[in-house]
Image (cartoon, rainbow, N blue to C red; front, top):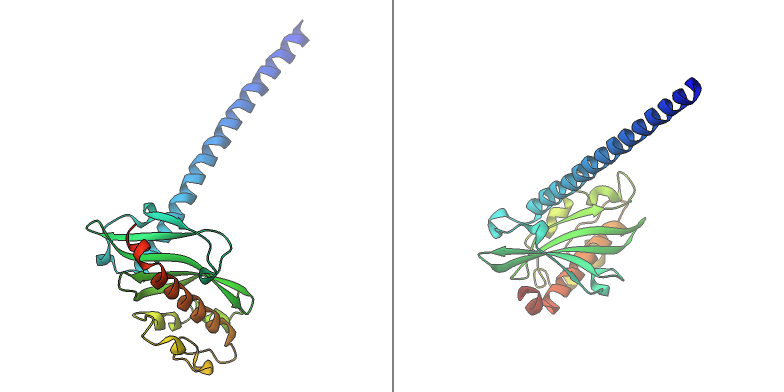
Length: 205
């Protein structure tokens, strides 16, 4: 009987330990998951504030989103997300989460902010696998090249000017690395073309 009682006590103890451990793991998972979500949102807000002047909107961009159908101009075969900036209830700008195909080591992910007048307020490369020291200069942490798009639009320059200088355009390329900046210029240009093409429906959201 003593042996059976001991086994029973040990089994109960192990069961309680298992329940407590499972509960602790579940709690840690929930806390960690929320922390990750909070960090992602904080990173998004920081990126938005870099490409869109804070005085241009008064809404929460992370909560003001919409999905738009896939379009070759946006470089994706799937629906993509836009962030809608509003000031006093009216749409003031759109931030596109777009893709620039044709980088040296694959496609590049871009955020492109365009105000209601069709002018780029800023853009950032948010994902890339370009060669360190060459193509990765599209990253704001590596160089200021990406700032060349600020205040640009279709018409400033004209479409012919929306190329790197090697191709007759106005945008700088990198020494020994023309492919990557060419892809980004094309990506921003196509996003502007998409905006102008769908301007009325975008601003009516």
